[in-house]
Length: 424
Ligand code: NAD
Image (cartoon, rainbow, N blue to C red; front, side):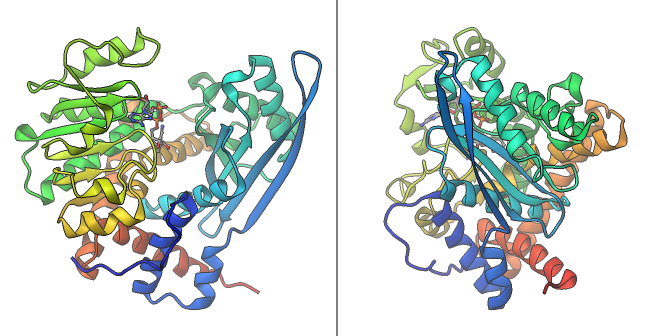
């Protein structure tokens, strides 16, 4: 396959560099003019807030919070809120741009954003967390809005935090506005099917790619790295469609069973074992990293970023990689993988099932109506399959790997919309 060298980057890759190197390649191939390139390269808005919180011991701590809106060209911006001690502006900027491309690739009418607070949620009490979420929301209530910017959970936040955010924003407006945030608990207007949505999209992408590669799911083997929300649902849904998931892994190591892991049993074990697979006996224990190098047809990295690096890429034996995680492959590994002829269903495509069902949550809230799970699944499967087919077509047309094709589809859509809308 044709491959263009990315512009030289520093040795260590951060999310911003990883995103920019793919963005540059796709923009070059599209022949994007400099003006539009500069518009899309730079975030539309970056807000930094200082959030003083009274801690349980009576002391006052000041946290730094961010909200970056990369683009609102396609519609209101959408993106999660990360609570983590490593959160910084550069990372939030990259993740916001990532959201722009992800929404554009699956053709949902959103721009991209991301937020974060530099804190350690594991060391904070429930009360401290609640005060932090409410204060963060108050600081940003003029940024957020169902037609402006719609947050969602990310690392360190979940339905509980989204409920507080919804409530605090609603207070600022003097009425209940549940469409300001997605990923809410079901009773507050969350959507059926949201929990499994990302794993389900990974399954749909994997089956679509297997069809192109003429891999019969009933004869295929698969390795799934990460057994959290995305990994366990992807594994379960793939297994239900005949794929034999032989190794699974999490932070405690990898677990291999040549007859296929009983995924339901493994999920049950994890749920009764503090959320980890440690001590799982229905399989052989292996070193965690080895899962990347197993002789399987399909590899699903669904744990964390930057696991497939340039030094590991050439030991991969799978014919297909379906990226459940965000940024599991470094941009330097892209080239090696492309040269090995391995197909990659890239993150901005393969894990977009989550944001798609978040969009459905927002649609349902605005309609004041609730869809059945069957309707949610049917519609998200169709969006995921259509997006895959479109990206595949562009990868053939430009003779480029699927990742670059996904960026081409996304950037082309945002750039064309920008040109129609015009500017100053
Ligand atoms: P999670 O916290 O539920 O699960 C993460 C899993 O990965 C856990 O099983 C953990 O033990 C494991 N893990 C962590 N580090 C590991 C390592 N070095 N090696 C092996 N396993 C490791 O998280 P999640 O929601 O499933 O998200 C996983 C990835 O998918 C992240 O990159 C996230 O950004 C991305 N993602 C999630 C969603 C979503 O809807 N949850 C949507 C899009 C993308």
